[in-house]
Image (cartoon, rainbow, N blue to C red):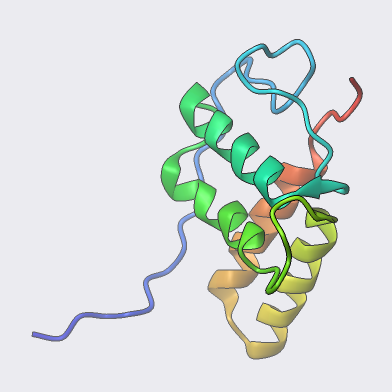
Length: 118
């Protein structure tokens, strides 16, 4: 039996109607600035998004991969996750990996759509 190892990435479903992604008025998911956040901030935000139903666990993998893509970085070291997503998308395009290009494009859309005003 042969198992295909490169399944195509299916775009995520839209967020539930009325879901705010990190807006200050959303008590369940605290706001955070993805251009100046720690790895722990990113993980906490993603977990909050999954718990609130604004993001599926499957969809969260694109964002979680960004939080582990900082070799040697401490959990409290700040990073620009929007820039990391752009770099990851560029690397995927260079490698010809359409699946990762789509995943990082989705991650960029999600991060760039945040209202970071407190």
